[in-house]
Length: 610
Image 1 (tube, rainbow, N blue to C red):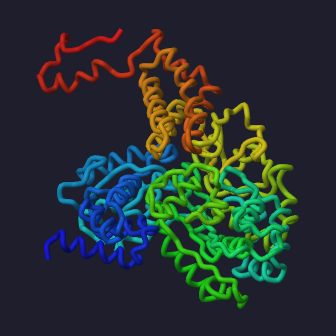
Image 2: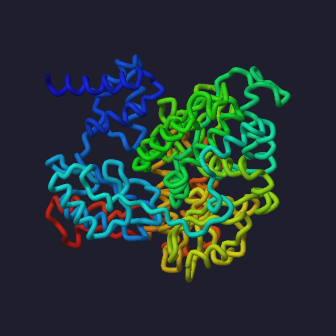
Image 3: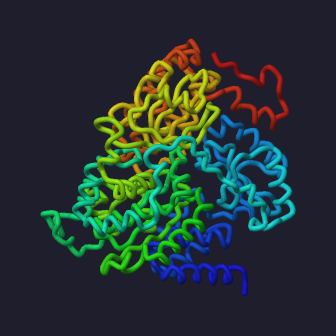
């Protein structure tokens, strides 16, 4: 059997194992990548032929997700996190040391095919960096000593399954518990209350709690679940209290926690997965769903097997499957689907597209997923923390949850705190807590500013630390990055802007082109070639991208620039040249290759920019 024939056999077997279901295309391609270290054109063609779909659809998916590759990767594929917090912890120095030790350059594969190395976006280990991935599995706290060990294992061709477990140990780092973390729900306790109290009573409890989605948008959870239960107009069953129409419904947990600086969902899934699944099952009972999905970001691959174990145990206990807790007709199960390195899939409609085996491109709205979601059916999409809170509210009641917080922001919020502080980790606060209180708790000194809500959020200065964390003041999905006065504001904005330019899905022109132009302009200023007109253009372009982009990524991509430009205009102006116009490139630097090829480095071989 030749190599191509063997490859086709392996790929066809993977497709068959997935029941030739084209909606599972991303899962199939992940398996192909794992088995063959890439998804070759031959493999793409085989997948397409076996599924009976056009090969361009398969190719488009391979090209969209950064963890899939059409070219072979090394037997050990190493990726170093490139987020700002990893930079602050020395990731670039560690990466350079790793490359020297492995005799490889970033983006390359070593000639012997043993190892490949590249940078990747945030790995969700921001408080345990510098961090990286080896064949998709997370390795935190990289030091030169740990890198030496990794190099030794690679060069000895040690199978990844034989690597020391200590290299992969990820800590929870929970620093402060409040209402939710201090009162974990026993498996099945919330479901027993649902069955005892009935659908309408629990709907009222969720409504009384005034729980809003914890992903950042803050939509009222009770309303979303009610809309899904009632369904689109053609299958609506109003008034409430009547049996739901027999349209299929779905519950999706968005665990694609891709916002740099956010890692609270990682901790909830690592140590409280039972409660998250309990919240999903409560939701399923209320809206009438039989199928749920946990969309797990690819960077959290290390959690996959553990989560499957939790699901298996819940099935064994009668908390998932047919006739949950003995109630006839209460049938619900959860399937885990892995992402493949695309930040945009955190957007709910892009996530649904990905679940359906497509590129993760956000849909036009309306209609919204709650009435036209997965496979066009009513679908609840909430994030991990929302389902975690819903399980507790179901058990303890809406008043218990709503008794803390502010008028418009009830309950507590989990924060992932990292950056320049001595006690990074997970903190739970009632809404309304001040930024200064948080900084005191996490051990932040001489703080210049804080990035609230990750790159898509807002950078606030030290003059605003009296502000409060709440939807009516500073809303956040959970990211809280501290920067002290040794940090360069332009470099912070630059890192975030590069992130957005890289992660743009490319669907709409304002985002695809606009984020690249913002990156180029900021690079020009940061490299010392900016002029006054560039600042004006940066501001104008940022507002344009914000107002004209298709989805939240483009609409927030300019936030790091606009919020720092508003607060620190003098720092931007200090980086400008005094001339009215400056070209966006280094003319003399661009001639370096020509000088090297010609062997000249005399005075006449240089050009001076004036």
